[in-house]
Length: 316
Image 1: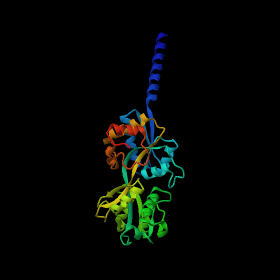
Image 2: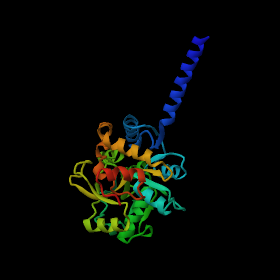
Image 3: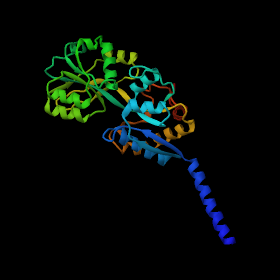
């Protein structure tokens, strides 16, 4: 009888220990994007790295990209999400496609740039932004981040949709219309090299618009989610010079109810094991502690801010 009791007591102790261990673990889901995009593999690498380097069990989940992801975070239906910083800006301030502000959005880290690629047909006669007038222009899918970026650029250039023939096209439709000679220019917002643009350059003589330094400075002053950047020469066939452009940043966001310690652990584990993320994907190599605060467009979560301050960074 004593032996049976001892076994039962031991089993109870094991179960209790396991329960305590489970209770100590923090579970965090990360909303990414579709499996064919960049957010998903990078998110998977971040989840694995954080899980290995902290007391957090992190899981990457497929998502419907920035607008859907930031809605999930704002509603506290997911803990962390990938979004573009322009989307975060509009969400926090209740602009563009967001009818109400989302003041509970908090930034965790900037990851890597996603470039504004204004593709132009070489025979279109487009030499500056004013010469877009009267042309057929693809501005992104309706209500998309791409369309919002195009409108911001047009506002600085002093042109509107009324000045041109606008088509609301996603990436695939933009490149297809180029191939059929149905548009003269089109916006694609993505990390380079973008597969659809690479394919287009193999079959069509295209160029990419370069913005001058003064324009980019004015653009970022009015729309702080833009950062000046460039696309190297020969990224695409036929474009043999560096392209001066701007980019929005892919960033990680959370909400203000997330515990400080959890976000601190998450941020610390991600950056102190950054080599694992670098090894996972080409875009992963662009993620760096040195640029973790670049282009953030929502207030920092206190947990993330704590880690950056420990590293001697200027946290505003």
